[in-house]
Image 1 (cartoon, rainbow, N blue to C red):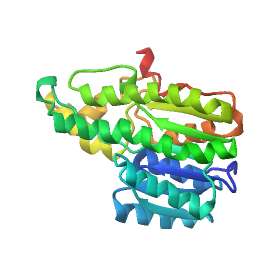
Image 2 (image 1 turned 45 degrees about the vertical axis):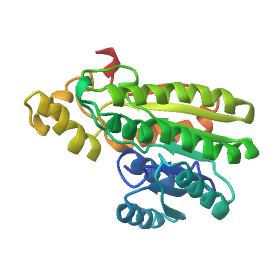
Image 3 (image 1 turned 180 degrees about the vertical axis):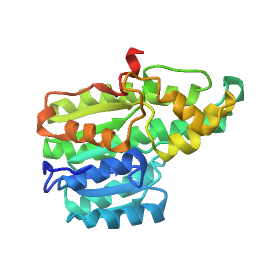
Image 4 (image 1 turned 180 degrees about the horizontal axis):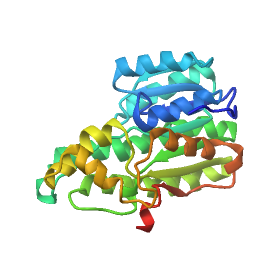
Length: 264
């Protein structure tokens, strides 16, 4: 999508999970609007290639290897951003994975892995950028939750728990950061056409119902009143709004971007 606005010129945006998917779309949007962007991810080749593409937009971009479930990895990544640019204005905590099994089949290792990335990773990145934003007395934190954080379905114990936790964490961090003029909000996307949904969620969840991934995606597209799935750039647009001056009086919220799914 062509973007005409340039609301973030000179600002620095850190995007965890920034190589592709929703995180990648958020990185694209902030770069299109003039921000310098640091993409944190573990898929180095894809992340490096994405940073090269972002630089073609006339901004500076770096790809940083970062495992968001590892405190030292997060600390090192954020320190490198601050050392290079001297500030952090925006964080989008988008790194995440999916797994889902019937309750009795969820191993402890499976639980720990998903919670470590999808919830602990959000906590660690929020905590790591906080000192820079507190010093500046400005900033925006946008955490990517999910509609699974507001509702649940069968075989989703670890995923729904993590995404619900992100909503609670967002409210708590918003309270802590409010005295420093830092806003903290969560986005709760519905099913979005990312690799995670098409290659992980659709085969796993659809397979349990005897559906092919294509059949499951087609069925899910009818759940919401808008009768389609989201595109990643649509989530990026909401993230950009939440980081802009137009949203300075919005904090502690979890915003549904679901085509009206919550009404269904």
